[in-house]
Length: 478
Ligand SMILES: Cc1ncc(COP(=O)(O)O)c(C=O)c1O
Image (cartoon, rainbow, N blue to C red; front, side, top):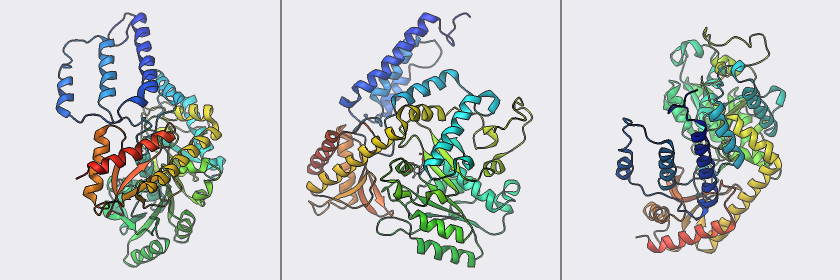
């Protein structure tokens, strides 16, 4: 084949692949000594892009270098050991390799016959994870998704389909009464988005108050369901959170499962981050009752440390995905008709789809459950270290969770609990480039600084450096 800009000749390809592996290795080696945060200058970035008007071809190595240099300069480096952020880890080495391989082979996961190995790998991983969560692997079904948002949306859709057989054809307007779903006031806002996407509207989401440990109050849930039924509304889903985004709180899964069973409601657990506790024998009891969930969200791109996006929806109801998503399409391949296999496009939201599960498979194959358990233990220990060092420096930790997510305020100054002061501290730290940290509002009201350790590369000295940066920032805050 003649070389074209779309398929470089062999020697240029070799050069490019070398640059690629060199850039990946360089990032792995040098990231730790680089700033965590970028300069936020949209005009500068747009000026850099102005030369790319695509009227004249650019040399491939030059264009590639532009990307590498740009990413180094203009990115909050979530794989950095001092990124104390939003459940975004450093990817494992082999998951980077798997994702690159997927880009090259480009398996199409809509139809089984197009990608038999990749699809069977994904189902294999789903069953193996289901077993870790207490499901019977023989009855575990599921699908990979772009992330927790899509997995939670899948849960809402399957719960609607189960509760209202007429939903698939008639949609929300065919239902007698307002369908309602129940989450804690600390749940992820993907449920609100999902309610909108389903045509239910975000008023269909009932936020149940939390207790002092930011866990959904089971009594309040039961009372609210009774009240809503009396008003003529139609509850259909209870969604617990295992590892809330704000605080790491884990709802009382067993109690909520009990209420959902009594009320005949679909019970979902959003374990997007915290689900990984199931892989650590001494933490598993935190998720007691998870096996009773009708469905579970788990994000491998969170604590399994693979590149985004790798959401997973699991269910112990083997028929429900089919009932929710099956449609007839004459143009789809038929070679696998008669085989005991599933076409993912009939089983999930996406149609043409990237092979998401291969990076998870390769990582699991190489690390094993024990490798992940050791990594998570290490991060939990770093969380405990952070709590201790903060307390010793006059910060007060205000959330209670065994997971390494710490919410705290400053006790050394009268304004140490105010939003303005805490926001200013986070901004100082971020602007310094020494770490990334954020603020949030617990229960929507109480301002706190929030630091989460989701990175297996974070070491004891990184944690001490964060506390040092915070101590320095509070001397700078207005
Ligand atoms: C508990 C929880 N659920 C769902 C999500 C949404 O996941 P994603 O961002 O992968 O779509 C998040 C994101 O952080 C989360 O923390």
